[in-house]
Length: 332
Image 1 (spheres, rainbow, N blue to C red):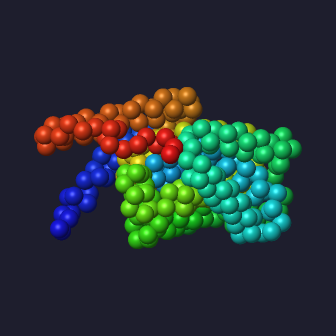
Image 2 (cartoon, rainbow, N blue to C red):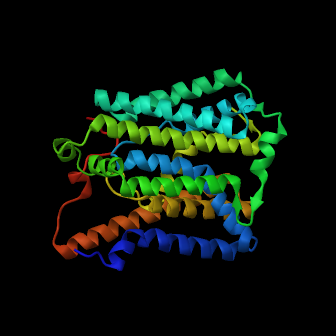
């Protein structure tokens, strides 16, 4: 059966409309948020919040949830600074590899034991934050070699080195989910877990891969931030989990698993970046930015819910998504 163009675009309709309206409103109330500078600031959001949201999306699509991404990002930033003698590429790769290994181990334990990822990752969130303080000596640390940090400050029109790396990772993730067997297994496990397992989808391997990608993306985000800023502090990124989750939900990633794409994540990150960057350009306080972000998120969720109910009513359906799919992180 041939899928029409409108059927392909429909899952992205609400995020596209939300992004367009948000950008127009922010541009009208913030004269400085226009042109090349505004696009540059939005793309910069992909290198931190974007990568974290991308990793979270993999666990959400698989029907799980990784609460430890903020602590993983902070620890990776510390590891990047401590290993900076390995060079720019070396310290980034070391930090990212550490995240991938930890995430894979975490996912393996969750899948093997069949326990709630929400409960388990609360423990790893606390543990990783403790390691961050121990490795840093409870104080901010810096990269003293400017040859490490200077290349990260280069700008190419609307792109930076960090945003280019992040966008490449987004493209690779999109190809992984769309064209590999492992990607299809992630969707299957999150969409209908019992049926997927009965059909032969390996639960442990799929959850392991999802958490490895989540931690790897969070670690890469921390490494890029550390090399760009030339420093790292153990208390950083406390709110990164919430921002990453908000970006996923704004873009249309389902909390029930099995639904959403990398393009959904990209739209969500763009919306969040427009709000944060635009209001920051006005000198708006952080508390007001959080208030606006929360209100926008609730509006998008409410609109999506009402649209879904209207569609069900027109089709004569009565089932609710929450009754047909397991909640994220429910374990088992």
